[in-house]
Image (cartoon, rainbow, N blue to C red; front, side, top):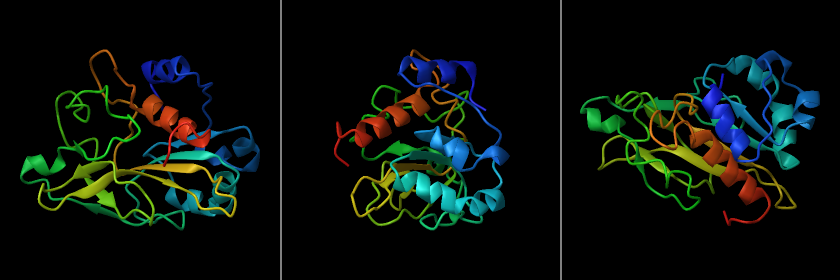
Length: 202
């Protein structure tokens, strides 16, 4: 569930928000949606049963923001989650690797710390599909892994929607302080919208 501030940040960015129970997810709901946010607390088996609907949504240009540590990957391009060792603790300090879309630019260097504690934002990674862009690192600096990656769903027209995969906690609390409090989801959605209308190049 998004917080009040998170909802406000989305609305300030020009998004009309609505919330629905997971088990209402289907073609009718997706038809009214251009960007779907899936929080980290979800039923993987149910979502796998809706995979055809979600792939059709991406094929028509819908965007999907996923927060997950997949045990049972529920879409064909997803891979199982792998945890990094929490020792030393710097392994779970997320580092921005490639911010070509400006998602993290105004959030500050400690955007991933909730109440000053690192390791809740992301504790591991999943292998991205070919063509995905590796945005953030987690794990040892000498052997980094991708915590966040976007990817465009391939279609014959090249107009498929975009997936933003976050391997970890809900993004709605980040950053948890400062002038851009809880702005991460809005920044992600803005980037996906700008990609969809061709303002940014993937």
